[in-house]
Image 1: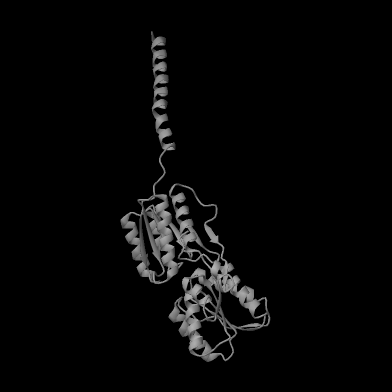
Image 2 (image 1 turned 180 degrees about the horizontal axis):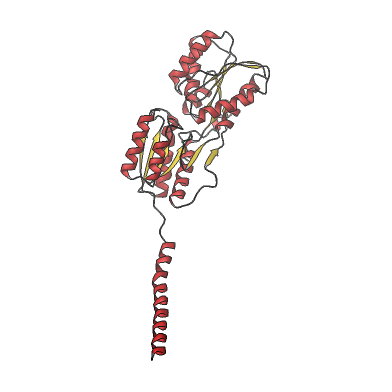
Length: 324
């Protein structure tokens, strides 16, 4: 009797174990087949919506998000290069429960606490155009290459001889890389002299104009100017024409609508290394959706190549206003 009882208990335990395994199996299968996390809300905080580059980037982000989910809500805010504003933007995105944040950092290092706060709330953060400490990934133009292209054009046009000004800008990673690329190319030409490289044109037309006026008052002979973006190039051109200083070659980075017009008109602007804000936004959204579902990018920094737009090829250039 005791032996038979023990066999019955053992058999019962065996059957119970099998039943438990069967009961647990469907749970494992359902977890494996869980639906991917859907993109519902996207928060975008950008340097300044007064800059057409960021307007195009915003439109690109919205188009990319709607392609993933036609019902996705995209909120775009302008930080006006104000770090405190950007902190507030990220707080509001956290409260709104966004799934993804695209951030164009006003300060690449100082923004880190806000980025980490968003990530702690379960939000994927992708930096666009410039780096942001703590972000899950970064998508930007290959800005070193862009600086090399623009200043390579300057060196070629000057035939390796002349006085060049580098009109600097806000100390964000994109600007630093453009200047680095420019200097690398110019350093290969011992007869090219850099007159100055430390004045900040603030990334704006007004800043470019003001800095250029000071330069032209200070230096009697200037052969070429590299500006870190197109608004500064337009301002620099205006200053030179106001002071009746012709014969100066201006090259920049962006490929903005204003520069397309300048390249088709009688201005000193001769070239711009283009960016593609639509492609940056699309890539950032795609990476973000992937990371929402556990797909880490092979590389945390994605660099998109730049192309040089000149008077010779501007009519074939597919500019920012054209949806991708």
